[in-house]
Image (tube, rainbow, N blue to C red; front, side, top):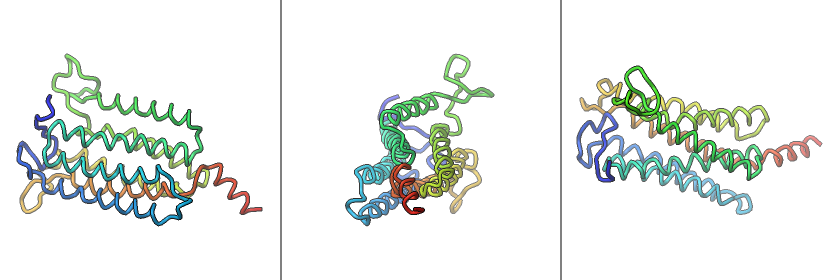
Length: 250
């Protein structure tokens, strides 16, 4: 594979190499750009003493997610595929580190180790392929292997981490919990729609044109990201939250 070689992953593009072969998929990336701008504005509305560098970083990463995805759905080659995946991966790693440190008060050293472990899990899932009645790593027995769930297996570790962190926060009464759990619920739906894009290709039509369900993944995923950005503005570490609750009860 070379950076300029075209890839055909989604229903709307089919086998076309045209720049505008995916107009719906391309336009739906506006949702990411709106989410990034609204998320940045939410940070700016906070008093300066309540802002942090990582709260600014998160919407910037969402902006790059939108731009990378837009580039991929216009050019659809190996180079833009990388531009699509890298910002998403960075956001997952940064947000996990943020949630562990700020919401769960995990010490920095342990946060780094947990993020590295999560990155290793994501890297492994990227290598797993599905063949005819089989799932595993590509080999002589899986010559017809393709990405599992139309490539959506990559997002399942993030979904699992989001659910686990959200439930822990809910159990401890942290105000960010509802935002994370709603984001997880929406992400579960959006991952399902992403996985079904090719399977429903003949059934999802706009004016007789096959569009699939990938555009819905963009819109719902942008909504889930907005909820995560909103959650990032909720308080500080659990230790601080517990102290505040203790002072209030006193």
